[in-house]
Length: 593
Image 1 (spheres, rainbow, N blue to C red):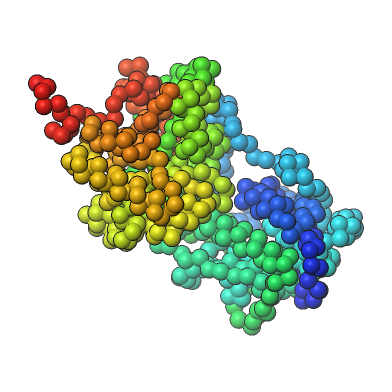
Image 2 (cartoon, one colour):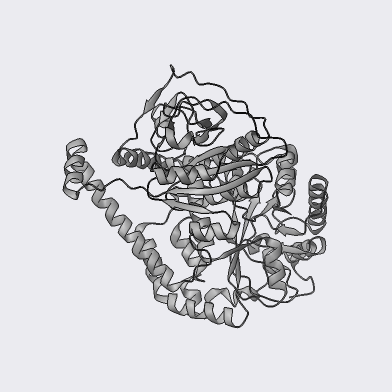
């Protein structure tokens, strides 16, 4: 939330025809990734001239520690002190572990500074000690902005937000006028048992968040949403809505409507402890409700795996450097099924967990498109460890994961059971587990995925077990799924992943048949892909459920006994065939004894 203290937004003429809208951004704090992409979009829009980013570095004078403790105890009692101590220890632990991980791993992506960002997109930035000072006002006036754009920071006064000739706009991640004021995204709505949260683009006016509305939308609150997941959703929706609202002003098409300020109320931000207690309650509910989270390993099992991982980590890192030096760096592939904040099925991962995983992966590995990865591996040489993201089956519930990937331009491949896409029926394995509402994507959604640059692959017609079906049935299924995907996307898929994808679910005959119809085939029993000329089969890991699992995959830790047998990074198992000939009589040689 950020609003101003002026009168009504100035009624100024729209930008002249063929003239670019002169925009200045008012912001504060470090450069967040969500804001970086937003700034890039503004800078690259032909209808907008982004004049500058004004970064307000004002900080309120810090109160003495004893005063903070006295005030906290007075307001919220001993529970506040316990919370603050626990938070400090957790924060210290995260900083230490992050620092240690950084010492052992080179980052591929660091937090970008405003200065580096400004040089890259060639937009001036100005850091001001206090945006309300006369020197800051003179600077802003010299830029001759037509529109001010608020993105984070404190409440701005009249003398700042009235400088742009067409006023200043703001994004408020709540529905107005019902929820004006402060607090984390979704906090007040969840306490009020609301079915959704709002996102509003409005003009900054005298009353907090009370200016005329330019654009607004709502986001449903899912059964297992947390404050963190709602923040992610609101950030993406808010950035997209904000961009479109500014573009409508640039085109001279913006239409605002006044708020009825007699309705609703202005909320004061809750305390950190109040926010913590609500988030804790929401996370407990999520762990009780989401089947995948109930399957987490016991503490002592996790401790044992962690100690084993730490014990062999030096050797794994030595091997990693050796692979890179020899041009034999592996590429590991992950497959997800469902990312959503509701118990869609037993494989459903919460959105915030998915986002944290992607952020960690990008910090230390490059995320490649499946086409880039295949090209590197088949060349026989690869000098950097990288990863590929894939999604199996084709669930509609992946909406927010798709929105996140699309906003940040992160590549991914979607393997679709195209029969379910066409008739809209749930998957048999979900129905058998009692999950009746895990629906597939629609044909229009698949076309939209392809239009936005995501790769589309085949996962059969109806999630068939290719270790069990007859060779002629496998041939028909593989051919039909290719034809139907081509009819929807306008292009024949080159990639096929075996449903279920373990060795017992792949017969020798079905493997050869899949290679006859598709250029590249994928299994799902885990493993790393090393460069090998003209290779056509690639291994994939199931998505990790926690940070330790992800760290293990990133560092080549498979199973302790395999590493002790000399199969660190899965170097030996990579060469094994992806099927078991004894798994199906259909694959056996009749002349073999």
